[in-house]
Image: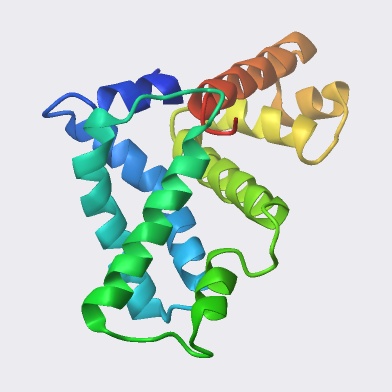
Length: 188
C-alpha cells in the first residue's frame, strides 16, 4: 500500500475502508496502550481503554478534518483522555491517589507536553518501521538500516550485501521516502 498518512486519515472518512482501518489500528494500538498505562491503568484496563478509543474514533474520524496547524496527535490524545474520563465516570471508580489533581496528573504526569511529544514520536516511528519493513526486499531494508541506524559506510554495506554503492544509497532513499510518506501529517 503506497499511501501517505494524510491520505490514510482521509480514507478513514469513507465507509468500507477495511485496509485503512487495519493500517490505522496497527499504527496506533501500541501508542494508545502506552498512553493508557501512563494514565495509571493496569494492563487489562489499558486494553479496554484502547478499545474504547477505537470505538470513539469510528464515530469521530468521519467528521474529523485534518488541520496541519493543530495536528492529529493532540486531537487523538484528547480523544484518549476523554475516553478515560468517560470510563471513570461510568465505573464510578476513582484512580489511586484520587482527586482532581490525580486526574490532571494522569493526563500529563510531568506537567509538560515535551515527554508526550517524545513518546508519541518514538512509538509511532517504531511502529511505522515495523509495519513497513515487510513492504521491502530484505536487501533493501538491510542496506538502509546499516547506513542510517548502524552508521556504516556505503562501501562497507555494499560489500557485505553484494550490491553496488549506488544501489545501497538508492535503497536508503526509497525506504526513507516511504517512511516520510507513512508519517506525513502525523508528526506535526
